[in-house]
Length: 290
Image (cartoon, rainbow, N blue to C red; front, top):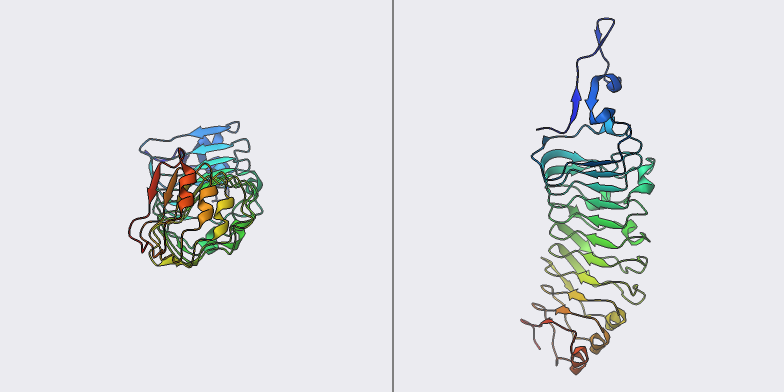
Protein backbone atom coordinates (compact mmCIF):
# COMPACT_ATOMS: atom_id res chain seq x y z
CA UNK A 1 0.00 0.00 0.00
CA UNK A 2 0.90 3.66 0.25
CA UNK A 3 2.17 5.65 3.22
CA UNK A 4 -0.94 6.21 5.41
CA UNK A 5 -1.50 9.93 4.94
CA UNK A 6 -4.60 10.17 2.78
CA UNK A 7 -6.56 12.93 1.07
CA UNK A 8 -10.33 13.40 1.40
CA UNK A 9 -12.59 15.58 -0.69
CA UNK A 10 -13.41 18.63 1.40
CA UNK A 11 -15.46 21.63 0.38
CA UNK A 12 -16.32 24.86 2.13
CA UNK A 13 -19.50 26.62 0.99
CA UNK A 14 -19.45 24.42 -2.07
CA UNK A 15 -15.87 25.31 -3.02
CA UNK A 16 -12.95 22.84 -3.01
CA UNK A 17 -10.53 23.23 -0.13
CA UNK A 18 -7.40 25.22 -0.76
CA UNK A 19 -4.01 23.50 -0.77
CA UNK A 20 -3.15 25.39 2.44
CA UNK A 21 -6.09 23.79 4.27
CA UNK A 22 -4.44 20.38 4.50
CA UNK A 23 -5.61 19.93 8.11
CA UNK A 24 -9.09 19.38 6.70
CA UNK A 25 -8.15 17.43 3.59
CA UNK A 26 -5.62 15.01 5.11
CA UNK A 27 -6.32 12.13 7.43
CA UNK A 28 -4.71 8.92 8.67
CA UNK A 29 -1.47 9.25 10.61
CA UNK A 30 -1.59 13.02 10.16
CA UNK A 31 -4.41 13.25 12.73
CA UNK A 32 -2.81 11.15 15.49
CA UNK A 33 -1.42 14.14 17.36
CA UNK A 34 -0.18 12.21 20.41
CA UNK A 35 1.98 9.78 18.44
CA UNK A 36 5.52 9.40 19.79
CA UNK A 37 6.66 6.48 17.61
CA UNK A 38 5.88 5.39 14.05
CA UNK A 39 7.39 2.05 12.98
CA UNK A 40 6.35 0.82 9.54
CA UNK A 41 9.57 -1.03 8.77
CA UNK A 42 9.64 -4.20 6.71
CA UNK A 43 6.43 -3.81 4.73
CA UNK A 44 5.59 -3.22 1.06
CA UNK A 45 4.73 0.47 1.18
CA UNK A 46 5.09 2.24 -2.16
CA UNK A 47 4.90 5.75 -3.52
CA UNK A 48 6.03 9.01 -1.93
CA UNK A 49 5.52 10.51 1.55
CA UNK A 50 3.51 13.68 2.09
CA UNK A 51 5.61 15.24 4.86
CA UNK A 52 3.72 18.47 5.49
CA UNK A 53 0.89 16.98 7.61
CA UNK A 54 3.39 14.89 9.59
CA UNK A 55 5.19 17.99 10.82
CA UNK A 56 2.10 18.71 12.91
CA UNK A 57 2.87 15.62 15.03
CA UNK A 58 4.76 17.57 17.67
CA UNK A 59 5.46 14.59 19.97
CA UNK A 60 6.76 12.17 17.32
CA UNK A 61 10.38 11.29 18.13
CA UNK A 62 10.91 7.92 16.39
CA UNK A 63 10.16 7.48 12.67
CA UNK A 64 11.06 4.23 10.86
CA UNK A 65 9.98 3.35 7.33
CA UNK A 66 12.99 1.18 6.49
CA UNK A 67 12.70 -1.90 4.33
CA UNK A 68 9.86 -0.79 2.08
CA UNK A 69 9.54 0.32 -1.56
CA UNK A 70 9.04 4.03 -0.96
CA UNK A 71 10.40 6.54 -3.46
CA UNK A 72 10.80 10.26 -4.01
CA UNK A 73 12.46 12.58 -1.51
CA UNK A 74 13.65 12.00 2.05
CA UNK A 75 12.96 14.58 4.73
CA UNK A 76 14.91 13.39 7.75
CA UNK A 77 13.58 16.27 9.89
CA UNK A 78 10.10 14.88 9.50
CA UNK A 79 8.64 16.22 12.77
CA UNK A 80 9.59 19.02 15.23
CA UNK A 81 10.81 16.56 17.89
CA UNK A 82 12.35 13.83 15.76
CA UNK A 83 15.28 12.01 17.40
CA UNK A 84 15.45 8.78 15.39
CA UNK A 85 14.88 8.89 11.60
CA UNK A 86 15.26 5.72 9.48
CA UNK A 87 14.57 5.72 5.72
CA UNK A 88 17.00 2.92 4.81
CA UNK A 89 16.42 0.13 2.29
CA UNK A 90 13.93 1.87 0.02
CA UNK A 91 13.98 3.46 -3.44
CA UNK A 92 14.39 7.12 -2.49
CA UNK A 93 16.34 9.16 -5.04
CA UNK A 94 16.68 12.53 -3.31
CA UNK A 95 17.10 14.08 0.12
CA UNK A 96 16.23 17.52 1.45
CA UNK A 97 18.86 19.70 3.08
CA UNK A 98 18.84 19.89 6.86
CA UNK A 99 17.11 23.21 7.59
CA UNK A 100 18.60 25.01 10.57
CA UNK A 101 15.38 26.85 11.37
CA UNK A 102 13.49 23.66 12.19
CA UNK A 103 13.25 22.58 15.82
CA UNK A 104 14.22 19.04 14.88
CA UNK A 105 17.58 20.33 13.61
CA UNK A 106 18.86 20.32 17.19
CA UNK A 107 16.94 17.18 18.23
CA UNK A 108 18.01 14.60 15.63
CA UNK A 109 20.49 12.03 16.98
CA UNK A 110 20.12 9.09 14.57
CA UNK A 111 19.71 9.25 10.79
CA UNK A 112 19.86 6.28 8.41
CA UNK A 113 19.28 6.84 4.69
CA UNK A 114 21.46 3.95 3.51
CA UNK A 115 20.69 1.47 0.75
CA UNK A 116 18.61 3.72 -1.47
CA UNK A 117 19.32 5.36 -4.84
CA UNK A 118 19.99 8.88 -3.54
CA UNK A 119 21.61 11.16 -6.10
CA UNK A 120 22.76 14.30 -4.31
CA UNK A 121 25.91 16.36 -3.89
CA UNK A 122 27.27 15.80 -0.39
CA UNK A 123 28.92 19.22 -0.21
CA UNK A 124 25.50 20.83 -0.67
CA UNK A 125 22.87 18.58 0.89
CA UNK A 126 24.98 17.35 3.83
CA UNK A 127 26.57 20.70 4.64
CA UNK A 128 24.19 21.29 7.55
CA UNK A 129 24.22 17.91 9.29
CA UNK A 130 22.44 18.44 12.63
CA UNK A 131 25.06 19.44 15.23
CA UNK A 132 24.01 16.87 17.86
CA UNK A 133 23.88 13.87 15.53
CA UNK A 134 25.38 10.69 16.98
CA UNK A 135 24.92 8.19 14.16
CA UNK A 136 24.69 8.97 10.44
CA UNK A 137 24.46 6.27 7.77
CA UNK A 138 24.23 6.93 4.02
CA UNK A 139 26.15 4.02 2.51
CA UNK A 140 25.18 2.28 -0.73
CA UNK A 141 23.73 5.25 -2.58
CA UNK A 142 24.85 7.38 -5.54
CA UNK A 143 26.06 10.42 -3.59
CA UNK A 144 28.67 12.55 -5.35
CA UNK A 145 30.86 15.52 -4.41
CA UNK A 146 33.24 16.01 -1.52
CA UNK A 147 32.81 15.72 2.22
CA UNK A 148 31.48 18.99 3.66
CA UNK A 149 33.81 20.89 5.98
CA UNK A 150 31.06 21.03 8.61
CA UNK A 151 31.30 17.30 9.27
CA UNK A 152 34.53 17.93 11.21
CA UNK A 153 32.56 19.91 13.78
CA UNK A 154 30.14 17.31 15.14
CA UNK A 155 31.13 16.84 18.79
CA UNK A 156 28.57 14.07 19.48
CA UNK A 157 29.22 11.99 16.33
CA UNK A 158 29.91 8.33 17.10
CA UNK A 159 29.30 6.43 13.85
CA UNK A 160 29.62 7.81 10.31
CA UNK A 161 29.24 5.69 7.16
CA UNK A 162 29.27 7.04 3.60
CA UNK A 163 30.81 3.96 2.02
CA UNK A 164 29.92 2.69 -1.46
CA UNK A 165 29.03 6.01 -3.08
CA UNK A 166 30.73 8.20 -5.70
CA UNK A 167 32.35 10.75 -3.40
CA UNK A 168 35.54 12.39 -4.63
CA UNK A 169 38.13 15.01 -3.81
CA UNK A 170 40.55 15.06 -0.93
CA UNK A 171 39.81 14.15 2.66
CA UNK A 172 39.69 16.75 5.45
CA UNK A 173 43.15 17.69 6.70
CA UNK A 174 42.24 16.35 10.11
CA UNK A 175 39.45 14.61 12.00
CA UNK A 176 40.48 16.07 15.31
CA UNK A 177 37.16 17.73 16.21
CA UNK A 178 35.19 14.49 16.52
CA UNK A 179 35.87 13.55 20.16
CA UNK A 180 33.22 10.79 20.39
CA UNK A 181 33.89 9.07 17.04
CA UNK A 182 33.81 5.26 17.17
CA UNK A 183 33.33 4.23 13.52
CA UNK A 184 34.37 6.10 10.35
CA UNK A 185 33.76 4.37 7.02
CA UNK A 186 34.23 6.06 3.64
CA UNK A 187 35.37 2.96 1.77
CA UNK A 188 34.57 2.29 -1.90
CA UNK A 189 34.45 5.86 -3.16
CA UNK A 190 36.79 7.86 -5.42
CA UNK A 191 38.74 9.92 -2.88
CA UNK A 192 42.29 11.00 -3.63
CA UNK A 193 45.08 12.86 -1.88
CA UNK A 194 46.72 12.06 1.42
CA UNK A 195 45.42 10.57 4.63
CA UNK A 196 44.16 13.01 7.26
CA UNK A 197 46.24 14.09 10.22
CA UNK A 198 45.71 11.72 13.13
CA UNK A 199 47.97 13.57 15.57
CA UNK A 200 45.17 14.68 17.89
CA UNK A 201 42.52 12.19 16.83
CA UNK A 202 40.43 10.97 19.68
CA UNK A 203 41.35 7.80 21.50
CA UNK A 204 37.81 6.42 21.19
CA UNK A 205 38.00 5.45 17.49
CA UNK A 206 37.39 1.71 17.05
CA UNK A 207 36.87 1.20 13.31
CA UNK A 208 38.54 3.14 10.49
CA UNK A 209 37.88 2.11 6.88
CA UNK A 210 39.20 4.17 3.97
CA UNK A 211 39.80 1.23 1.67
CA UNK A 212 39.13 0.70 -2.04
CA UNK A 213 39.23 4.23 -3.42
CA UNK A 214 38.85 4.16 -7.21
CA UNK A 215 41.47 6.90 -7.71
CA UNK A 216 43.41 6.05 -4.59
CA UNK A 217 44.80 7.77 -1.52
CA UNK A 218 48.49 8.59 -1.82
CA UNK A 219 51.42 9.40 0.43
CA UNK A 220 52.70 7.53 3.44
CA UNK A 221 50.90 6.12 6.46
CA UNK A 222 51.25 8.57 9.37
CA UNK A 223 53.32 7.23 12.23
CA UNK A 224 50.92 8.76 14.74
CA UNK A 225 48.32 6.10 13.91
CA UNK A 226 49.82 4.22 16.83
CA UNK A 227 48.14 6.74 19.13
CA UNK A 228 44.74 5.20 18.37
CA UNK A 229 44.73 2.87 21.35
CA UNK A 230 41.07 1.84 20.97
CA UNK A 231 41.27 0.95 17.26
CA UNK A 232 40.15 -2.60 16.49
CA UNK A 233 39.72 -2.41 12.70
CA UNK A 234 42.06 -0.55 10.32
CA UNK A 235 41.43 -0.90 6.59
CA UNK A 236 43.47 1.13 4.10
CA UNK A 237 43.53 -1.48 1.32
CA UNK A 238 43.06 -0.68 -2.36
CA UNK A 239 44.85 2.68 -2.47
CA UNK A 240 48.23 3.98 -3.66
CA UNK A 241 49.94 4.39 -0.32
CA UNK A 242 53.74 4.39 -0.40
CA UNK A 243 56.59 4.25 2.07
CA UNK A 244 56.91 1.84 4.95
CA UNK A 245 54.52 0.39 7.49
CA UNK A 246 55.09 2.50 10.61
CA UNK A 247 56.46 0.50 13.57
CA UNK A 248 54.04 2.38 15.83
CA UNK A 249 51.32 -0.03 14.63
CA UNK A 250 52.70 -2.37 17.27
CA UNK A 251 51.41 0.02 19.96
CA UNK A 252 47.77 -0.50 18.95
CA UNK A 253 47.00 -2.89 21.78
CA UNK A 254 43.50 -3.99 20.71
CA UNK A 255 43.93 -4.10 16.89
CA UNK A 256 42.11 -7.17 15.53
CA UNK A 257 41.97 -6.51 11.76
CA UNK A 258 44.77 -4.81 9.80
CA UNK A 259 44.42 -4.60 6.01
CA UNK A 260 46.95 -2.74 3.85
CA UNK A 261 46.62 -4.97 0.79
CA UNK A 262 46.81 -3.64 -2.77
CA UNK A 263 48.98 -0.59 -2.14
CA UNK A 264 52.55 0.43 -3.07
CA UNK A 265 54.19 -0.09 0.32
CA UNK A 266 57.85 -1.10 0.50
CA UNK A 267 60.66 -2.08 2.90
CA UNK A 268 60.50 -4.75 5.57
CA UNK A 269 57.47 -5.75 7.58
CA UNK A 270 58.11 -4.16 10.99
CA UNK A 271 58.87 -6.69 13.73
CA UNK A 272 56.78 -4.55 16.09
CA UNK A 273 53.71 -6.30 14.64
CA UNK A 274 54.73 -9.17 16.92
CA UNK A 275 53.65 -7.04 19.86
CA UNK A 276 50.05 -7.70 18.78
CA UNK A 277 50.36 -11.35 19.79
CA UNK A 278 47.07 -12.74 21.06
CA UNK A 279 45.13 -9.76 19.70
CA UNK A 280 45.50 -9.51 15.91
CA UNK A 281 43.14 -11.90 14.11
CA UNK A 282 43.49 -10.86 10.47
CA UNK A 283 46.55 -9.40 8.75
CA UNK A 284 46.52 -8.72 5.01
CA UNK A 285 49.59 -7.12 3.42
CA UNK A 286 49.21 -8.80 0.02
CA UNK A 287 49.99 -7.11 -3.30
CA UNK A 288 52.56 -4.55 -2.14
CA UNK A 289 56.33 -4.19 -2.63
CA UNK A 290 57.37 -5.48 0.78
